[in-house]
Image 1 (cartoon, one colour):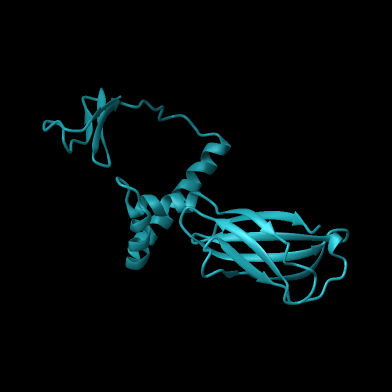
Image 2 (cartoon, one colour; image 1 turned 30 degrees about the horizontal axis):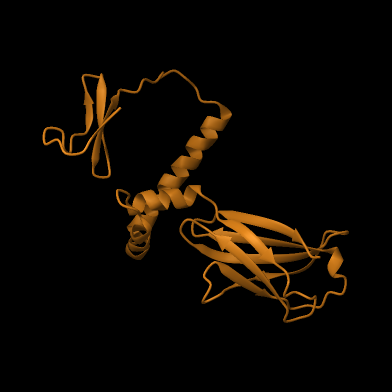
Length: 191
């Protein structure tokens, strides 16, 4: 594979030449690569079919996202040089948010105590849900939405609404959701 940056003869060239090699454009660079070969009769494995369907869904999401002028503008702001709003929307669909940490030091089992969730996404986390369970019985005690901290934009604060006496028997699940609807979760025990 050859990478060509400043050659006037191939600047902007795309496509294949004699089914031998192909010109590709990536950002401001033109790349020459050997023509890929595929077997038209090959059937994909179950995992390949699943990946293709997921990628197709991502492409439909990205197409819809760039049709919305405001959303396209936001994706374009996040795009590094050589990428488009479409590329960023596609990536956002394929990459789920991550809950990095759940801080329970401000939670004492009383109403008004707080749980801080640190969630991150390559584009934007739009919601964080906190669920509190009794570990021994798996009974849901309370559940609700955390609120984005206006200063620390990776922190979401959940304020408890119910009293819980036995803190050592509680499990907290924090679930982050991004713009395309992907979710990522982290489960912690209160100690």
